[in-house]
Every structure is written in C-alpha cells, then in structure tokens.
Image 1 (cartoon, rainbow, N blue to C red):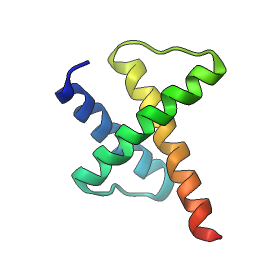
Image 2: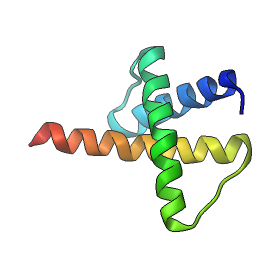
Image 3: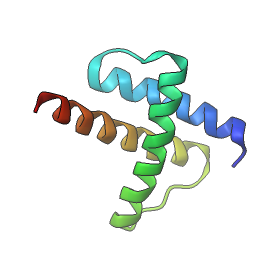
Length: 80
C-alpha cells in the first residue's frame, strides 16, 4: 500500500476513533498518528484472532478497531 494511502487511512481511522471514544478528533497530525499506530495494533489483534481484512475498507476497519483499542487503553492508563 502506498504511503499516501497509509496517511489517508490513518487520518480517517484516527478521526473516526476520536469521535467514537471521546467525541472529537485530535487535529490532522494527531489523527494520522493515532490511526497509523491503531492500524499496527489492529493488524496484530486481528492476527491473534485469525482474522484478515483486505482492501481499502478492510484496512480502514482494522485501523479503526486498533485506534479505538489504543484510545481505550490510553484512557485507562490516564485514570490510574
């Protein structure tokens, strides 16, 4: 997947996850960062479950799931 596609998926996933978890995004760079890290985390989690998602939509879903999990973990760490 191209670098630009990675940035687009990361930005979308970060923005969607931000809206799901706390009602707002994190700015363009924050959304991309959360989305890219979420994509890596989501790919790892999907691999553990034996799931595989292909194509643009599959990559976006994987990144969103990973980003939501990432934001949830961060919120739990901040509460401690």
